[in-house]
Length: 194
Image (tube, rainbow, N blue to C red; front, side, top):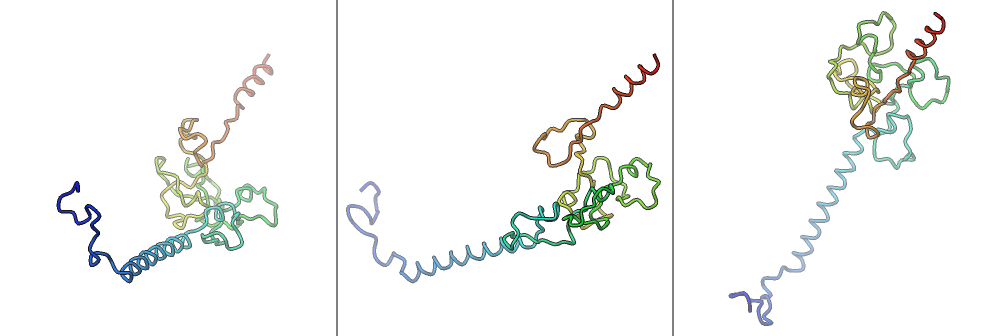
């Protein structure tokens, strides 16, 4: 035998008293099954306490019919951006047409000190320009509403400031295309003046 003092050398077997009994093995297996079952239940319960980000952001979920493990709450659905611009005439629009602070983006005019509309539906909150974008707002609903000190914007702040985004296509925010109106207007002005 390679190991001195081993009871398992040269065909020797472990004494029968050292083996766990069948009932001990069954208890260990049952205990492991119960632990795994509790873990599974806790995981599912944790998911059930979170809102479905697809439903809150788009007003629908591809896993409908009770198959989605997350909460589908119509009161938490994002506001229709076409409605905010006065362009949504869809009577069966899946997004909400109710103006609430929890759903509203920041007023870009207010942030620049230019908003004079007393009935402006957008959020009038002074937000630090270096503040991060509110993740809950991006999902469609920020429970903090006007008390939130993060940006409520769909536009990527890095792209807005620099014209480029280091995350490129991986970024979940909007990267608006810049319009080249200045080149056209200069050309038209030069032609009109000559």
